[in-house]
Length: 400
Image 1: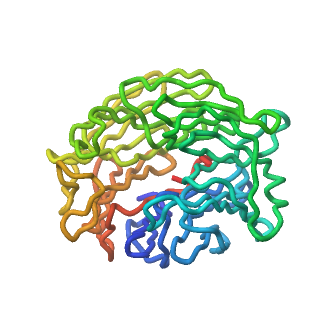
Image 2: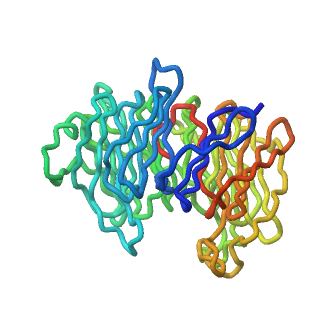
């Protein structure tokens, strides 16, 4: 049996599907899921099951799916990042480029799912990261935006954001300067209140104390390179990322080295495991396991890692059926190949860590690895650019 409720989003085709326990894919609806913002698990304490939310970049709505049904709330688009508080009641959405060559929107939306209402305010142009961080002084939640060029972290008391007047005013918060300009990837451990962002300098950690962000120092990446995308293991308070090394030029993506880095947010203690070279476009966590798909002209591979103490180890590594139109060596990995979009793969691990799902971008296939054997499903649309996968579970409060 395949764990239920796997969401498969073909955002290029504007379609979504759900994979049931019998391994069949059923149409769910039509929406252009904001791929960069990803999908957010809504913890919803006391509910029979967690919900999930994503931004529909066509309709300009936050799509919220819960056991009681689907609701939609207007939000500013294009969606760049989304995050929630540990209760899943408040959801923050920031805006990015969309189809434009540079960042142009500075609008942030805060949605109160319990009241069915939302507010909008202006902050700073530049694709800000979004977090909800508990204040060290009393635990009150703060909306935190991570800015780039110049790098900074800006904190706004959530209660003040909810009182934002109409007409989308500009709102400023308490700012921590000195973060590296190239921040990309964020995590929050709600048990300790420690948050972090991935930069070229390392994992830069901070807390919000009395409404003001305070730096805790950076943890060096354990190998040359840096991570761009982070996931949180909330049960262990650890940030996990794939550290990319090798040539800086994206045209040399076939020569990129990859390592899975696992960092304790409180102590800075770091573990590391080598991965195959090539393009590792994001990765997934579930239970105590991680899964990474790497794309390379010599063959694509799926690596599944057990992260339980005392040391990380590879559970299995398996070849993946090649994509019909993979990225071309010597070209940018996100450049189209002829008339076809740049193809890649999306990966998900179910909350128990027993099943791994990985897409075959452009070929409309979903591979499910369960109990050591693969099952392949063919979907009605091509899953260009790999689509997006999501299994609800855990308490990571940032969209992935």
